Amino acid sequence: MPASERIRYRLVGARRRYHANDNIAAYVREGEIEELKAEVQAKMQEVLQALVIDTESDHNTHETAKRVAKMYIDEVFRGRYVPMPAVTEFPNVARLNELMIVGPITVRSACSHHMCPIFGKLWIGILPNEHSNLIGLSKYTRIADWVMSRPQIQEEAVTMLANELQQRVRPDGLAIVMEADHFCMHWRGVKDSDTAMVNSVMRGAFLKDANLRREFLSLLSRKNG
Image (cartoon, rainbow, N blue to C red):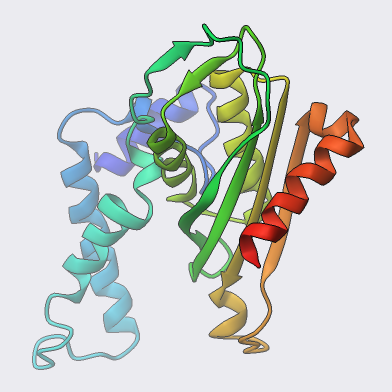
């Protein structure tokens, strides 16, 4: 049985969802990542053949199927196949309770509709309380990269990131704003090179306190200016 079928069998048996933007690392066993890459390579070679590309004599595409398989599994969709990076959490000994903003964090993802790139930046606002866990600045970037390195739509990606941060930091308020260029618009379809998408998630104090929300957004505007 191919590795993909074995993994799918475990997921179905556990009644776990395995959509494009889901992490399935817990169901992938040792050695199966390399097997998956070999499967993707073979299927990608069939795609190239279906596109009537002579990969035998075309030196530019001779190793393309192998490169694409490695890129999908090890790089652009890595967030599906590996566990969340280790995050050291520290107690809020100083009882910090002031707004802090992390960003802009550069993020790269892919549209699950057309597998086209999504490039953008996001900002994270945290209002901690005495019971919050504090994490290092670089860890916000690592968690964001882990969530974004999957095929998905931007609206769901930001919500998933908010869920991860809410669970680990446990702040009084959490805000995320993401602005991104979608190559499914730039590269195909309407081919509009100027349109970007901006969306946000506001939770806790950011949702209830209009002044806090305005402060966060005004600081972002000043940062972009």
